[in-house]
Length: 411
Image 1 (cartoon, rainbow, N blue to C red):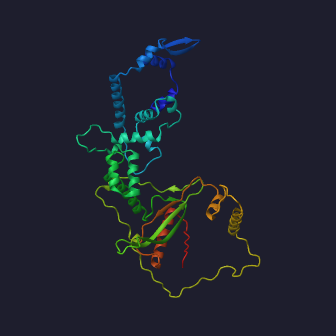
Image 2: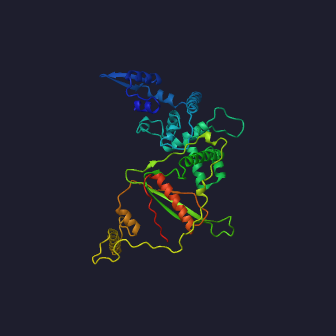
Image 3: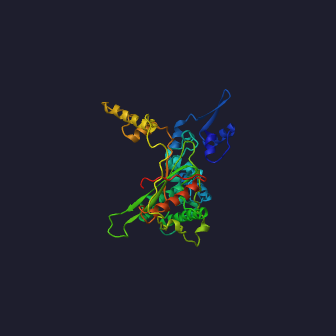
């Protein structure tokens, strides 16, 4: 336990302990402790006068306690100001643990859970979520010198992942500046202005990638994944009596389905570059994503393609395996309706029944994103043709060399 604790406090590579030196340190730290040798073993025990020892421990020395707290604060503040970090636009898996010094995390963990080495050495990362969160707030609100006013200036080098994530989460859910300002005043997250600078930096990085590829493609999409798209009307506030309050346009949704053992190759992660922000405006969308070119029919009469394959079914029709599955669900439904009481494994609905028959996908989630909206409605042929061109270019960027297949539910 002693070796594990030393490694957790920053002394990496400690695998063996000199027992004699450890014994001498324990004896020097505890004046009432004595050593006894018996059959080649060293036994550490207190004096026979246990009463005087308990009396000494029970008495509080406020001066020594204040001095001890002062020393602990100096050690923790030294490590806090030595550790610097910079948010680049992404959160790594262990970013919260790396954002706080080990001395501070150990102190908060001992305050919350007690200074018991047995519980602190049970796993590799023994700090709880609460201790890591409190440590990040302490790092974020630490100042080298306290000012005279109520305003506290927070350094970018000590912005912890929790304070940035809280501001981004609240802004994404509510879009309320007053709520973020309230959390900022209480030391829980970054300021609203700092939030805008982060979002602007990410926007510059994404726009730079758009200019490099020549195609507007959301950064959350991955390469070499089965990708489908859907084009439909999007109506916002259709009951508005003014044109300023309503929107009737066309949306293109892109969905990617990961497969078992492969979740796609990431395209890129937006990285905030201060050099791109200085003296530059956010790049506007290309014209092909804002203007729909007019389309006309060259022929008024539409040509119906000929039928490929036999027009008349054979006398013995082949049984479609998909139809067989539908009959399986119907038979299962008929069986469940005859049962007086359903079990937890019984699925009545069509979707639940077929989902229970599929193999588990280890909680893999479909990636869904939205392309830039078109102001024109999806009823026109021009918008449909323009949307198909945009979809084809996007699919080619994500899956080079593959020909996209386009189907329509309406003529």
